[in-house]
Amino acid sequence: MTDNRNEMPPSLWAATAPAPPETAALAGGASADICVIGAGYTGLSAALTAAEAGAKVVVIEAAAIGWGASGRNNGQVIPTLSRMDPDEIAASGGAKGEEFVGLIRDSASLVFDLIRKHDMDAEAVQNGWIQPAHRESRMAVAAKRVEAWGKRGAPVSLLDRAAMARLTGTDHWHGGWTNRSGGRINPLGYARGLARAAISAGATIFTHTPAEAIARDGAKWVVTTPNGRVVADRVIIATNAYSTDLWPGFREEVIPVRSYQMATAPLTDNVRKSVLPEGHALSDTRGDLYFFRFDANGRLITGGALALGFDWENRIRERIGRRVAAVYPQVGVPKFDYVWWGYIGATADKAPHVHELAPGVTGWNGCNGRGVALATAIGRELGRQATGTPWSDIPLPLSPVRPIPAYGFAKRIAPAAILDRRWRDGRD
Image (cartoon, rainbow, N blue to C red):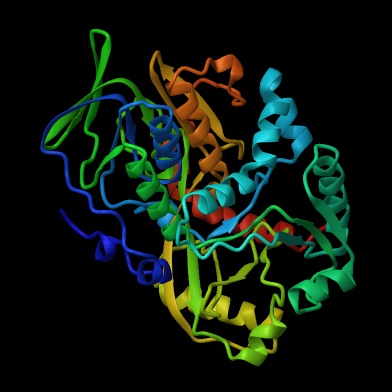
């Protein structure tokens, strides 16, 4: 048995999240009703749902619980998609479109309800997410989003410039909108809390157990690992941006894009009270996103993107330091105590893709920067489907796997897309 605390890459979350439950690597054979591959939000949400329904669940994870995007993201809980608005989501989802919109609408509340139900130590603050408009022309976008989400029952409001300045502590933005069901968490604390809840419900989690192959054997699926195998009736592949070649074409459907995160030293009380004074999570309308939030100890957590990865730490410190000072002059150029990165899973159309890969095998790709709430919600639905709920009652539109053409080349040039987004950010 092992304590995985020091197995995560260095980050604020690795330093502050509560210790994970004890786990071990799989050695030998295991059998299950459901084998879940990946111990991030999707896999752990699916495992918890299925275990609570009475299924025998085995989760295998190549590294540690929450080792991928689930333990390295900014921790904003946002009940939207990043590039698609409700009408577009509904239209693209066919017969399941509006149901999927409803799932997304309620996804942040699902996260916070799980945290409260299982008493997770995850620094959870559900007092809203705000999206400021970085140009006056983007206020039309904000108004459209408030109208579209509002008519579907989301707790949203349009904010004028004065209201936005009051909530953010700066006059940098032109107004925007808010969704009161959103908020912020310690993302690694949440992943570990989900794992603990799944184990309490009866699931078994094996860490340091990568899936090397998956094959049909009669009526069963066999997932092979370095030192054993899991025989199961059903399999859920929950790897997203950290996928391998386990299933043909699955990895090539999503581009892993680096997202850099950073945390300042704790701000003084006076400065702290003048920045995001009500504790909201914030990410604006830029393509080269500006995003800010606090942790429980008064550290301002932000980050950004780079087109090239060389000398990344010095360059991101300098770039985002100047950004913080421009948006929040009262903070100035901050000292960053922590700088880290993880992958976002980006699909070509910026939409999530949910798959029945074969009878008894499911998976999905494409968090596109909205993974905390979205992955939790999709994981729950995959767990329900694996325990007998028919697809007709699952609010997920299914699609075939669509590998990105010239995947190797697309993967190499993907970071440079930030240059185009920056160019577009300066135009109406």
